[in-house]
Image (cartoon, rainbow, N blue to C red; front, top):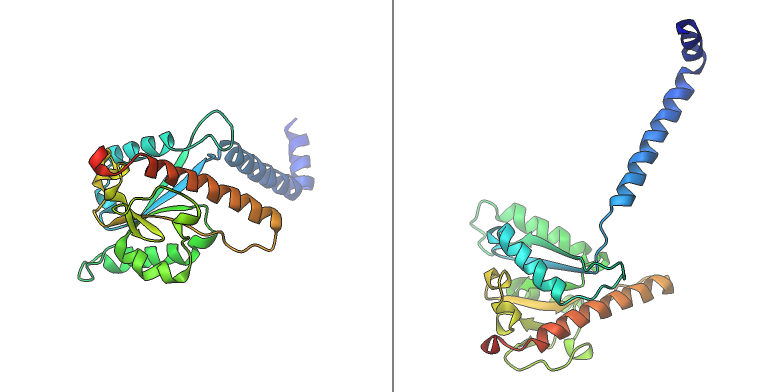
Length: 217
């Protein structure tokens, strides 16, 4: 038996190693694809205080966002991705360089990421709004009150009932809500898919507006 194995290994050592390697890679890839989490909405917070959002706060935020989101992929579960990128306007902070470099990197690629709803600091918004990456909200939603409106592209989170809810109330007072534009794709199929995703996120903002302002919460 051992002699046969020795003979087999002598003649087929490298083919066996190569086949085994690719088999392991295939198993890992399949496992990752099978367990990949699917999301019905993608939201991100960009601003000061990201580190002060506790795990409990994040769970409260996710719970509220799920209540405002449809089961867009119709899999029976509403799942929302909520990411955070810390930013600091305090340039004397030892962490400012790293934090703000991370945000700059995120913003440079945000157009082609899945995120369509941004909870963003006023300072960051004012810096990026001229880049035309955010849309005019009146083209997508209705019922925006004067006290909710920061400008034609942004809502003031704290002036909505959402901003006064658990989790969201922990975000800084200057946090704004914006909707990302659809990036350019040469494929009409991909463009239509992104148009649908943007519309689904606009529905979430509409529901935030429909909750009313914080004086009604």
